[in-house]
Length: 162
Image 1 (cartoon, rainbow, N blue to C red):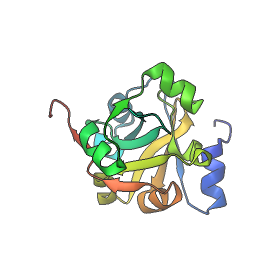
Image 2 (image 1 turned 30 degrees about the vertical axis):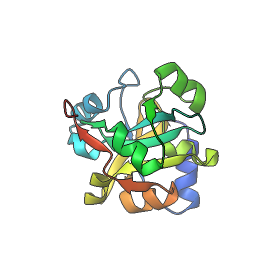
Image 3 (image 1 turned 90 degrees about the vertical axis):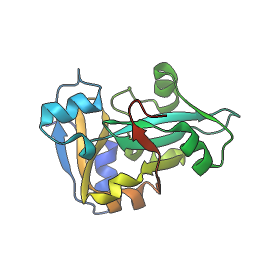
Image 4 (image 1 turned 180 degrees about the vertical axis):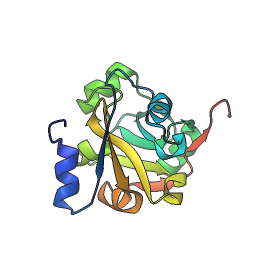
Protein backbone atom coordinates (compact mmCIF):
# COMPACT_ATOMS: atom_id res chain seq x y z
CA UNK A 1 0.00 0.00 0.00
CA UNK A 2 1.31 3.44 -0.89
CA UNK A 3 1.63 6.19 1.66
CA UNK A 4 -1.50 8.21 2.32
CA UNK A 5 -1.62 11.07 -0.14
CA UNK A 6 -3.16 14.50 0.41
CA UNK A 7 -5.90 13.65 -2.09
CA UNK A 8 -6.91 10.70 0.13
CA UNK A 9 -6.86 12.85 3.26
CA UNK A 10 -9.07 15.41 1.53
CA UNK A 11 -11.62 12.75 0.53
CA UNK A 12 -11.61 11.38 4.09
CA UNK A 13 -12.11 14.85 5.58
CA UNK A 14 -15.22 15.20 3.44
CA UNK A 15 -16.31 11.63 4.20
CA UNK A 16 -16.17 10.63 0.53
CA UNK A 17 -15.52 6.92 0.05
CA UNK A 18 -12.76 5.99 -2.39
CA UNK A 19 -10.86 2.98 -3.57
CA UNK A 20 -7.12 3.06 -4.25
CA UNK A 21 -6.13 1.53 -7.59
CA UNK A 22 -2.41 0.98 -8.05
CA UNK A 23 -0.42 0.22 -11.19
CA UNK A 24 3.14 0.60 -12.45
CA UNK A 25 4.36 4.17 -12.06
CA UNK A 26 6.08 3.71 -15.43
CA UNK A 27 2.66 4.14 -17.03
CA UNK A 28 1.64 7.71 -17.85
CA UNK A 29 -0.89 7.27 -20.61
CA UNK A 30 -4.43 7.06 -19.23
CA UNK A 31 -5.60 4.79 -22.07
CA UNK A 32 -2.75 2.37 -21.38
CA UNK A 33 -3.59 2.45 -17.67
CA UNK A 34 -7.23 1.62 -18.43
CA UNK A 35 -6.07 -1.32 -20.55
CA UNK A 36 -3.67 -2.63 -17.89
CA UNK A 37 -6.38 -2.35 -15.22
CA UNK A 38 -8.99 -3.94 -17.49
CA UNK A 39 -11.28 -0.92 -17.09
CA UNK A 40 -13.05 0.80 -20.01
CA UNK A 41 -11.18 4.00 -20.98
CA UNK A 42 -14.35 6.08 -20.52
CA UNK A 43 -14.11 5.40 -16.74
CA UNK A 44 -10.45 6.44 -16.42
CA UNK A 45 -10.05 10.22 -16.47
CA UNK A 46 -6.87 12.17 -17.09
CA UNK A 47 -6.14 15.64 -15.73
CA UNK A 48 -4.64 18.14 -18.16
CA UNK A 49 -3.11 21.51 -17.39
CA UNK A 50 -4.13 24.35 -19.69
CA UNK A 51 -2.82 27.90 -19.73
CA UNK A 52 -4.86 30.95 -20.76
CA UNK A 53 -3.03 32.84 -23.52
CA UNK A 54 -3.47 36.13 -21.72
CA UNK A 55 -1.74 34.81 -18.61
CA UNK A 56 -3.48 34.16 -15.32
CA UNK A 57 -4.02 30.99 -13.35
CA UNK A 58 -3.77 27.64 -15.11
CA UNK A 59 -6.96 25.64 -15.68
CA UNK A 60 -7.33 21.94 -14.89
CA UNK A 61 -9.33 19.78 -17.28
CA UNK A 62 -10.50 16.27 -16.47
CA UNK A 63 -11.43 14.19 -19.50
CA UNK A 64 -11.82 10.48 -20.38
CA UNK A 65 -8.62 8.59 -21.21
CA UNK A 66 -9.55 7.98 -24.85
CA UNK A 67 -10.63 11.54 -25.62
CA UNK A 68 -8.89 14.74 -26.61
CA UNK A 69 -9.36 18.14 -25.05
CA UNK A 70 -11.28 20.61 -27.24
CA UNK A 71 -9.38 23.82 -26.55
CA UNK A 72 -11.90 26.11 -28.30
CA UNK A 73 -14.83 24.69 -26.31
CA UNK A 74 -12.84 25.01 -23.11
CA UNK A 75 -11.83 28.62 -23.84
CA UNK A 76 -15.48 29.54 -24.44
CA UNK A 77 -16.59 27.85 -21.19
CA UNK A 78 -13.72 29.40 -19.23
CA UNK A 79 -14.40 32.86 -20.63
CA UNK A 80 -10.93 33.05 -22.21
CA UNK A 81 -10.10 34.19 -25.74
CA UNK A 82 -7.62 31.41 -26.25
CA UNK A 83 -6.06 28.62 -24.19
CA UNK A 84 -3.21 26.23 -24.83
CA UNK A 85 -2.02 22.95 -23.38
CA UNK A 86 0.83 23.42 -20.92
CA UNK A 87 4.05 21.68 -21.96
CA UNK A 88 4.89 18.73 -19.68
CA UNK A 89 7.71 20.61 -17.94
CA UNK A 90 5.44 23.65 -17.41
CA UNK A 91 2.59 21.48 -16.11
CA UNK A 92 5.01 19.91 -13.61
CA UNK A 93 6.43 23.30 -12.58
CA UNK A 94 2.96 24.83 -12.14
CA UNK A 95 1.44 21.93 -10.20
CA UNK A 96 4.47 20.54 -8.37
CA UNK A 97 3.26 17.11 -9.54
CA UNK A 98 4.67 14.80 -12.19
CA UNK A 99 2.85 14.34 -15.49
CA UNK A 100 0.86 11.13 -15.09
CA UNK A 101 0.19 12.04 -11.47
CA UNK A 102 -1.46 15.44 -11.82
CA UNK A 103 -4.65 15.50 -9.77
CA UNK A 104 -7.28 18.18 -9.14
CA UNK A 105 -7.73 16.58 -5.71
CA UNK A 106 -4.09 17.32 -4.87
CA UNK A 107 -4.38 20.93 -6.11
CA UNK A 108 -7.61 22.07 -4.44
CA UNK A 109 -5.76 24.65 -2.34
CA UNK A 110 -4.62 26.48 -5.51
CA UNK A 111 -8.20 27.53 -6.33
CA UNK A 112 -7.69 27.03 -10.04
CA UNK A 113 -10.67 26.67 -12.35
CA UNK A 114 -11.46 23.01 -12.89
CA UNK A 115 -13.53 21.66 -15.77
CA UNK A 116 -14.69 18.09 -16.14
CA UNK A 117 -16.13 16.57 -19.27
CA UNK A 118 -19.87 16.08 -19.02
CA UNK A 119 -19.49 12.38 -19.90
CA UNK A 120 -18.24 11.87 -16.32
CA UNK A 121 -21.77 12.51 -15.06
CA UNK A 122 -23.01 9.42 -16.91
CA UNK A 123 -21.07 7.22 -14.48
CA UNK A 124 -21.51 6.72 -10.74
CA UNK A 125 -17.76 6.34 -10.20
CA UNK A 126 -14.71 7.36 -12.19
CA UNK A 127 -10.97 6.90 -11.72
CA UNK A 128 -8.79 9.99 -11.33
CA UNK A 129 -5.17 10.42 -10.38
CA UNK A 130 -4.38 10.52 -6.68
CA UNK A 131 -1.56 13.01 -7.26
CA UNK A 132 1.21 10.47 -7.72
CA UNK A 133 2.16 8.31 -10.68
CA UNK A 134 0.95 4.75 -10.28
CA UNK A 135 -1.99 5.61 -8.03
CA UNK A 136 -5.54 6.34 -9.13
CA UNK A 137 -8.59 6.76 -6.95
CA UNK A 138 -12.03 5.40 -7.78
CA UNK A 139 -14.39 8.07 -6.51
CA UNK A 140 -18.11 8.85 -6.68
CA UNK A 141 -18.41 11.27 -9.61
CA UNK A 142 -20.84 13.79 -8.15
CA UNK A 143 -19.01 13.98 -4.83
CA UNK A 144 -15.77 14.59 -6.74
CA UNK A 145 -17.31 17.34 -8.87
CA UNK A 146 -18.65 19.11 -5.78
CA UNK A 147 -15.42 18.73 -3.82
CA UNK A 148 -13.13 20.13 -6.53
CA UNK A 149 -15.78 22.68 -7.56
CA UNK A 150 -15.53 21.50 -11.14
CA UNK A 151 -17.63 23.01 -13.88
CA UNK A 152 -19.19 20.38 -16.10
CA UNK A 153 -19.07 20.94 -19.83
CA UNK A 154 -18.53 19.29 -23.18
CA UNK A 155 -14.78 19.75 -23.35
CA UNK A 156 -13.66 16.41 -24.79
CA UNK A 157 -13.82 15.26 -28.37
CA UNK A 158 -12.77 12.15 -30.20
CA UNK A 159 -9.09 11.84 -31.00
CA UNK A 160 -8.64 12.97 -34.58
CA UNK A 161 -11.73 15.19 -34.42
CA UNK A 162 -11.45 18.98 -34.83
